[in-house]
Image (cartoon, rainbow, N blue to C red; front, side, top):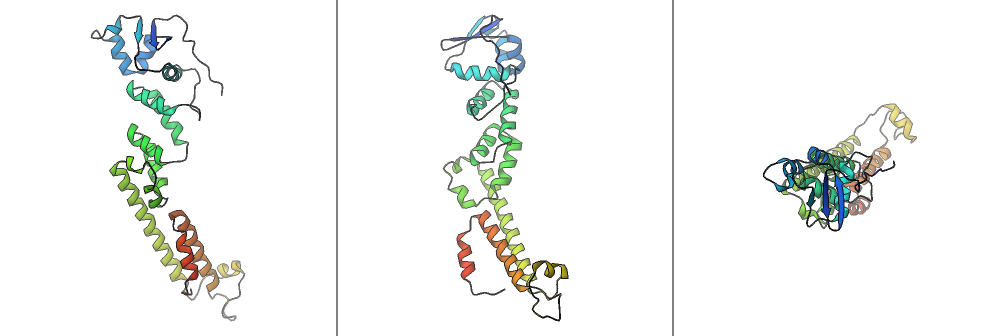
Length: 245
């Protein structure tokens, strides 16, 4: 997509002075997009209502340019090169919901990270927070706790991650027990045995369970879940175990 820029050098009804640059903008557009600008430009209590030039001290011109690019509807979209932290800060300062929504929509398309969860809790992104909590809970809790920004998470989000992790462990243990118990069953459907290609333990009973397949199924399940839960080291202990299934 091409990104078209409004010509902020054109003469309009308002000029924003940032550092050594002038941005020629429209009062109506700023007031419509931002409650902060609306009060500043429409209220009798502010001198900006009658000013033609408004100074924005302590602001960088490239940041204001970026904000204006997304206020004016000319095809701008967020990319990897966009300073999204700058956009988020300005959208909060000036209460610009349009930019806030664009940022959350963009982040929802990314792979969830601890950094994104921090952004979600800081800016109140409900959908992003739910997605991050759901997918991060599938990772090993110890790995999350080792993350350098883990302590920036709120206590409620830490608790939710721990609760989700416990649920996953409970499901893991329950499934492991079910597969182990199934290995002691005497009969299973013939289709299961035919697909595995192994000879039945008793030739006169083609329905008899294939213990080799059941053991493989259990090992395969444990290997897969251990990888997800960050428990790969436990696999070596499992393989060295003398317990036969």
